[in-house]
Length: 277
Image 1: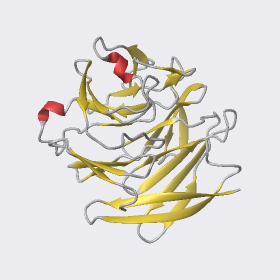
Image 2: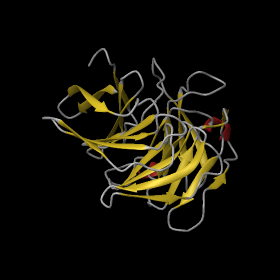
Image 3: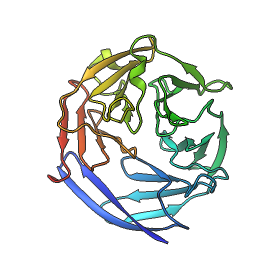
């Protein structure tokens, strides 16, 4: 079966938007796949159902054409897994619907390797690596339909498994799905106060349809602060499309194809609506 995927490539410096349609030949459909992007490439990873093996597709994007590569499949099923890319070479694939198995794929070695399993399902959560490149932090998601308020942490420099931690104050605000997670890091960041912080933006909660605030998580002190935002439409994200622009701005696209630009030094948020592009 042939499935069409619309891809948006936004050049923030020259204010240009490219919309391309590509055809990917997959056994049945792409509905169980998750997506993660870098500056010049896109990964699609997932299973067509909760029992099928996991496909891995690599798209190389440029202004001339789009090159598609079908990489090595995983033996495990991952229906809409959580994805994270480490140093543009290691693709981390976490869980999925009714799945606790985790794996990583080396793009250079073309090999899959097992990772520690999750203590529980974390469907439609999200994960990020801290600025020390030492720990993975997994936030949100649901376990058998119940929203989670704990954080799962994996130390990449040890042989242990995922550790579950709780935040004493405002921990209930972590209960959300379909959100974007990012950090400003140290490089190009003039505001040293937020260099140890992880930010959670948008998403959906059980208690309320949308999340009209940003969570600021200090992983050094295990503390959460709430930052209210003033946006007409609170976004949610079915795919992970965060892009770091010149180390000064972070750009991402929500499920309605709106483009959000966050400036690192003053936390100013700009929105480019899909109808404007």
